[in-house]
Length: 283
Image 1 (tube, rainbow, N blue to C red):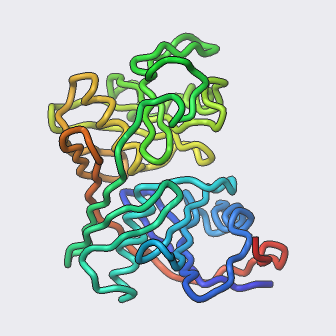
Image 2 (cartoon, helix red, strand yellow; image 1 turned 90 degrees about the horizontal axis):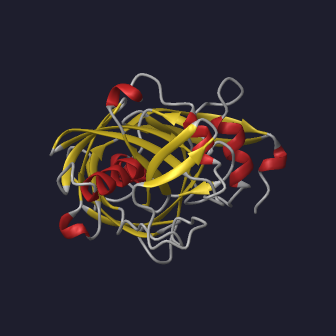
């Protein structure tokens, strides 16, 4: 067996196992994610974060869903930034972290609150990707087995189908139709589904169904996608507190350019994962 030291981290209930891989050879991350993220049979989490050296930035972070697919992750960046500062890997107040979707500037305060630049949201079908010739999928009627849902497709490093709906329709139990939307033929690489409701011009409530995961307590990119879609619908300002069941992030979209999330993350515990040798081989 191969032993992997790990740290459990979370941001607004979005929880991850983080492996500090700055000084080790890389294993088969996808297989490791499947094993470590499994509830009951593994540690149980919404994803695996690998912290790695970077030739382009201060650090590199790779995120893998529980099904082994690699993805971008806003809360993962929050968790990685707080971990870096908390254990003393860097004392810098401003960092750059390389991720699947590019380079992200991060500001970290003394209270271990981080502000992360997630880049410019896009509604272009080619960026989602979505099988559509339209300029954008805004308030688009999506035909499903049980009826029609109107979605706005936004990518913030990872794609979201955003649905603006009364909060009572999703807050207690995220609609099962989310599973059907995730795998709809319109989205060849699947899509995250974020339900949102405006409580005021400066406040949103959301629930996110993450592709490869299912319902989660929070999602950083979902918060950004929801704010962008809701703002374009005219129901929220360009900055707002976005609340998920696991907590609240502050999202800013100044001049509709790059979008930022601010929040905190927590180190929950550390341990060792004993992995079968078959997933310890380098990719």
